[in-house]
Image 1: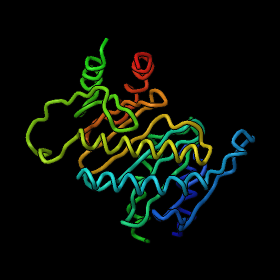
Image 2 (image 1 turned 180 degrees about the vertical axis):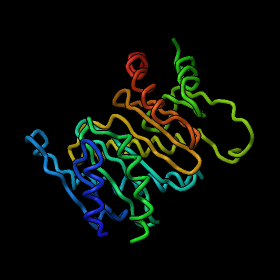
Image 3 (image 1 turned 135 degrees about the vertical axis):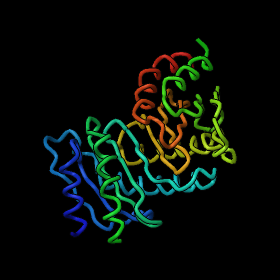
Length: 124
Length: 124
């Protein structure tokens, strides 16, 4: 299965999903999908740029966790007014991230990434 | 009610809570409480230092969210092998954070911080 199909399935399984990506910690996406967004409430807001920016944050989280000997960082979530992002580590170089609308199902997003991470990582 | 009492109540309400702090984004704690930890599995691991380190990460998350116009960052969670940290913004300068054991109740931690944030913020 290619990443695009997997990411589309993930988005369809999670209420409120706006986009999903497999990304490097350098902010370069291996694959990204973006859902159609009804209305234009978020028209001025670029989900893809947000995920690129967050990739650097996730890199900093990993470094901080290593610094304090808390072990490997496996998952993060960030809630802002317009977006919830949930990321999960795949390999030392890559992670998968879902962007949700603020009212989206964060628990389902975390669950879905946890279930899918192994098979995505196996293809990286 | 002082912060210490509030933080202790929060820790008691959340299964697996190890510690809680009201902190500045500069990493300086206004108040911190740490629960007794059974056994010594995590003896080499300092929860307080982790929270100080994460305060800088949360600051970076806020900056990233501002950068991509995602609105104000209100909440974050970071899962590592030994620790789950859940933070919630209180004021432009302060946030509250709970550190949990990996098997702790993340959903309850988020809920409890959301419910308590207003009254803690009012005293800052």
